[in-house]
Length: 190
Image 1 (cartoon, helix red, strand yellow):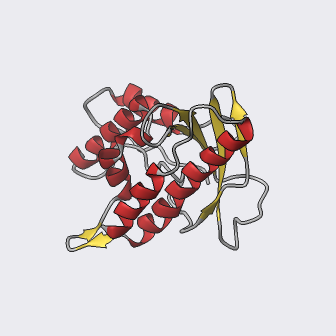
Image 2: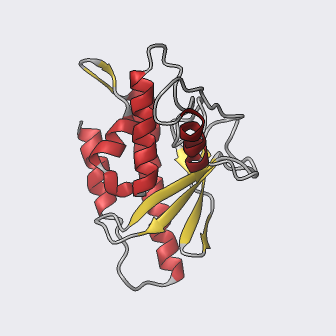
């Protein structure tokens, strides 16, 4: 739990001042996303407690709700609930939403940050022999500035050049199945 606590304390120090240059704001956004992946990457591969594996997605969504757009957070929690309620586990999206894949790296880099209107698009790349230095990011985190202790929150995650993204996948999943009933799994193409 020390790792979780230290991550969230570090995140609280990333909040941007009210008036900053675009360059300074870009640095704050980069730091916010990098610190999240510095915690989340290792957490996804190494988190265990006395009861077995710990799900860092649940930890992030439940204990740090301010880090996520409320609609995105609700859809993710609904998806987790549907998976929990499924007898065979065949419900919800079939990938780790903050990675956009079932396979992931322990460490991630932020090679590019750019403003897109009121939001920031942050390229996220896994660091390993197969991915590092590639021309295509593993995903793009969509980040928006908000008035919370973090100063920023995740609004969405884009997975490919065709615009496939987490919000759309979650909404499609809910639309196909409604709030109840058998749900299919949406998988990634990575």
